[in-house]
Length: 200
Ligand SMILES: Nc1ncnc2c1ncn2[C@@H]1O[C@H](COP(=O)(O)OP(=O)(O)OP(=O)(O)O)[C@@H](O)[C@H]1O
Ligand SMILES: NC(=O)c1ccc[n+]([C@@H]2O[C@H](COP(=O)(O)O)[C@@H](O)[C@H]2O)c1
Image (cartoon, rainbow, N blue to C red; front, side, top):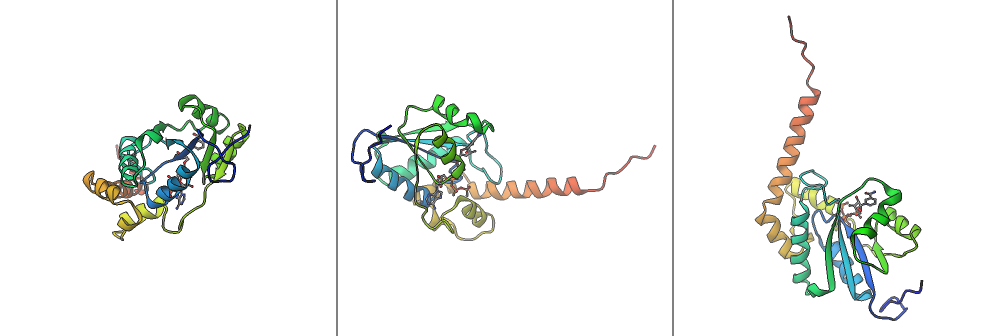
């Protein structure tokens, strides 16, 4: 398969890329990655991974909320809505058939961009050209770090596009994460409580 790129030294037009993330939440690292990828391809499929999961500490936001964050962040960055598709991808927890499963949901694509080594391996084994895109300030531009800061009342707003900060405030996202942590603590306490055998 001969792949042609605009800026990676291959030249060429009409390429469609695939980029998958959980976007919990969308942050400036994703935006940097997307800016890089949009220079390489004409169209991009953005897969919203773990689409079935929400309301957990690792995945607090719903798929529709993550889609809204992506739309607002990409509008804010000036990307034409005609250049990308947002497609939810529920997990199947079956690695050997995950790449063909993704192929069965999204339109055809020519190349995969990812920073996730498992995703890279699974698509390479299917015969796709895979580019591991550069990481930008992964020490702070990481959704895990942002969720930690939200939980611990540290500043997170400068790590996320302005439109996403506003949206997270609108949906009371930080309050949700704090509530999820409180629930978890309460559940753990309940589990640790000694079992009381009723007296007859
Ligand atoms: N700082 C960053 N710079 C460039 N790409 C990034 C950055 N952070 C994440 N990505 C890329 O975005 C894609 C989706 O990542 P994901 O949504 O899991 O973000 P994350 O910040 O790593 O999330 P989490 O910390 O919750 O696992 C992956 O390919 C990942 O490599
Ligand atoms: N077997 C599977 O269901 C499978 C395999 C590899 C990646 N994935 C998903 O792809 C996404 C990868 O995105 P991240 O880079 O954000 O981890 C995640 O949602 C992950 O769960 C799923």
